[in-house]
Figure 1: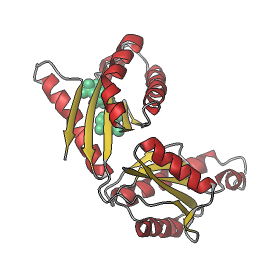
Figure 2 (figure 1 turned 120 degrees about the vertical axis):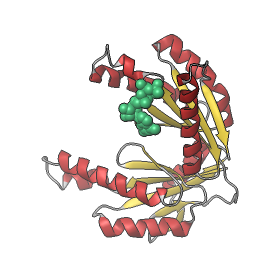
Figure 3 (figure 1 turned 60 degrees about the vertical axis):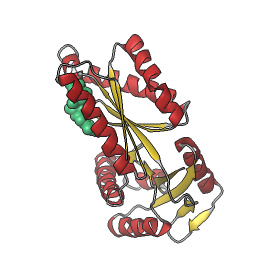
Figure 4 (figure 1 turned 90 degrees about the vertical axis):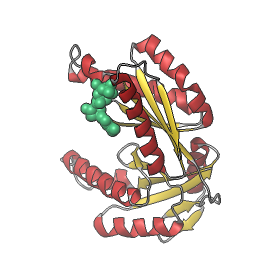
Length: 250
Ligand SMILES: Nc1nc2c(ncn2[C@@H]2O[C@H](COP(=O)(O)OP(=O)(O)OP(=O)(O)O)[C@@H](O)[C@H]2O)c(=O)[nH]1
Ligand SMILES: [Mg+2]
């Protein structure tokens, strides 16, 4: 099982209007500092925050209790004028956990009304998470013939295909910056990865490497996924034939 927490700014739309029209720069600075703070709070608890749409954040919150979430809310309230709500869900797949979190908020199933926390804490004392870290092989050489903006366009096209492909496998894909993507994955997503890599090779002439990590906490799974990816690079750079997918578990 996997536990997921979704953090969202409460009443953000109406609040943004109170800043007047000359507000975009303020919103961008607020979103950046909010993200920094949330990433710090959750990574200290062995998790990692995936920035969804700047006003909404996904966290694989395995092993993070309601009390931990309340502490995080208290910390955020001290520092920011805006408030966040947190919806917690769990399930056999990341998509199911996201659905439970979504339903709990919609149906106002409170875990803590005082701190705006909805949902349910995962009862499984040994939750699991699989992270796939996908990265474009040698994007640097593409940058020799494509301008920065064209590279961005290629990356977002890739993101779109990746998100659609893995959502069909009940998995959630996030863009991490540069040419990096992470999929919070199911076993079926893991099994289909080589098919996805092949499809992107054919359709986009993009070559992907995929490092996979399995662990109890998200930070540990990401560490292993990135280590797997770096292992693929090491094999390649030693002149041997590299695998496209490499997996580590703890
Ligand atoms: N989020 C994240 N971004 C990274 C990471 N490593 C590199 N980047 C970003 O990705 C960009 C491309 O770097 P690389 O992927 O190392 O470059 P490359 O030419 O594709 O080299 P290979 O991936 O080794 O084939 C960098 O400029 C960084 O912005 C990482 O671990 N996480
Ligand atoms: Mg790369």
